[in-house]
Length: 245
Figure (cartoon, rainbow, N blue to C red):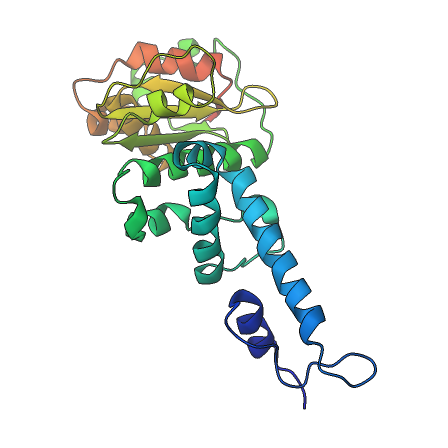
């Protein structure tokens, strides 16, 4: 009997299922033990990939909780790509629906942040504009300009202190998080991504630029609380603006 790919995959991801019928050793005996070893190795490898991808989540919930959670996740969300560096993209949604995580409502947004940091790390390189390029534009030209940001740039807003929680779990002697809404900007001026605490208006502004709005339009979208000079200065210092259209 031929083992179908769907049956093999289902059995690999579900430890309660028996080895697929028709799976045999070279001597014709059912390959139950070999399959169990293989299934365990797959689960361990995927769990380790999740541990690497979400070190802050792991630290927040502890190893036993994380391993149990990873076991549930990997069976609900098997890899869709052979690139394990991107495995775990559904983690924020999963955590939002995972009953044991309900007591930590900030976990989904911390997962979003860790995903954004990982995608920023693997984003394509880009050459920044000259530091004085914006200053050479007339005010009208500046308001109508579209600023193309580097592929690594990400902006996130949360009802929770995602910047404070992240730093408290990755940086020695960091201040304790204050339970309030926070927004962050992620850049990669060199080899590694960096995280910056920004205002919600600044995060809205950056998202608007990413969506293709002109600088003037993005300012309007961000509202009166935007400090344009501060956020543009940060973007330029972080080599985050790569083109002016």
